[in-house]
Length: 192
Image 1 (cartoon, rainbow, N blue to C red):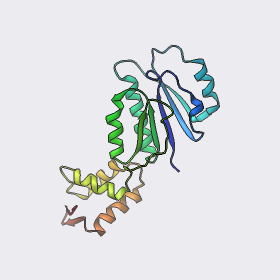
Image 2: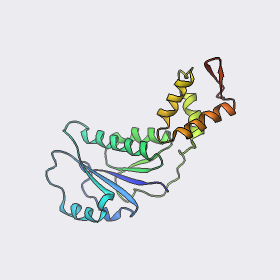
Image 3: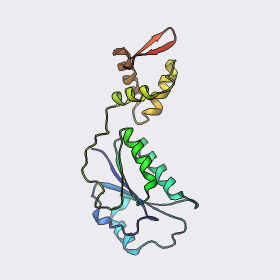
Image 4: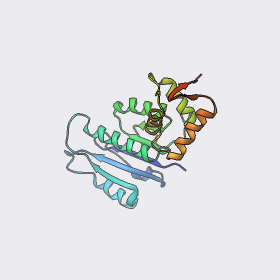
């Protein structure tokens, strides 16, 4: 079962009712350095969450400083747990290109403006198995790796959540299906 994580932009969303969050979800509440007071009701609601809730006070200030913090923690979550369902609670449309990109990579991610929309069962149409995703990424690549070491590096950067053995399995399948061949020390591809 995948993890569910809610990233809350407290600079942008004022009324957050933590009682609406599913009991299996984790919550990260982001607030700015200039926010001197947090709503008492929110703090009281947060207490029963224990380790499922994390307060993150952003470092410094500036345009989109809080947004960059959310993007960092979102990336960290999806790197360590690629199957997590991540929802950003924010009215900031600036998150939408990031969300679209993560969906094309097969991650379950969304941005909502209300907790009523968070964690609503929705089809995970963008979710593809790692081998299909690998073929898609290789087809998009402008300059395919010509050496085994280069391809191994691509696999590692594209699939950080997989083990070394799982990445080796992807490579083996490429060879077995004649998608990649090693001629001398150079790789040739058949990705059609």
